[in-house]
Image (cartoon, rainbow, N blue to C red):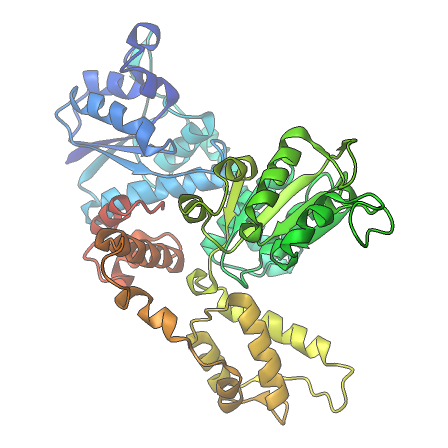
Length: 501
């Protein structure tokens, strides 16, 4: 019978190696000092950099193997996330050892929500001894009657049950501002969760993503969910403004400021005063405009062309780019100080090919949109997809993302003569595939900064993330999807290639 200790890593534990006089050795080390365990499994929502020094210190104090599973949480009291993480951690260890494992759950490290989850699991799904520790009383078994522990169940499962109830009753989601962003994939659910959190904060947001992924749609949803929802949302395509007009367009001008300035004009910043200014294709801004934009963000005021009088503006900036700004900075095309001023909250929209489970929903939603657009056109027929047409669309890589999908459905609806879009209609509606995507990995030129290890990391991160998403977080299933031998091997690959699970 293998004796295993499970615990979340707590703040006191992390302080123990350097602040033992103040906090002692921490709950986990205290348990290992007085009990013998065959294995120690820790869960952590702290960054790896914070935990590694503690882990080395802890290993020096015990003969038992110590392993850490990193489980990033959106909050330390998110019951649903904590519950799922704890279940994954225990299941991964127990595996085929069922009946040969003696579990101990440590209640003291971490938050009260984490302790509540251990109580529930220890009294129901994974029978275990519950322990607690303190500097005054040492380690002792926690006495928790089952009827008390059962009281935690509604709190722990409320979020999951509510989600299922809403789906079955077709009720609106909790955040209607984001309802237009069609998704079911984990990667998009995490993105929207973060967007909802940042929406109510008055901080700049930087949205990154390929062309056609829906950056402006996400920006509008953030604005609608913010405290500025009643004020203006002003979108600006930075790449569409001629270099010589950038300052005038953004900051305004006075009458006579330049040839053709026949009257004073507000710029986009003043037009968005009190609301949100959406700077799309931010990476297209020329260098001089970046300098002026940085000053406006620092000072909170604009000076119109032809004027020396600054005007205060209260504007929230949401910027978007399809470029990788870190690379633009390295190449000297984008100012690093401006990047850090804007990148307070960074949201990365995944490409459609990485949104496992979303494509079918999007096809149905966008085809409905196409039908609504064409309802008043002569000879309109409500279009439906044949099975062959749907399969063809689901197999396409969609390098142009959601925008490409929408326009393909529009073309297919036009090409189809009847009410059913055939596979041939869909095939003719698809644009010729670019050879760039196929040769992106295997056809890259050697030398000139080529780095094989970085390329392999990029490929591994993509497939590991997709497997996790498709397997709904089940690492055993995900391992099978990518041809790895076990969940443990899969977990090792996640750690090696820095993929969060």
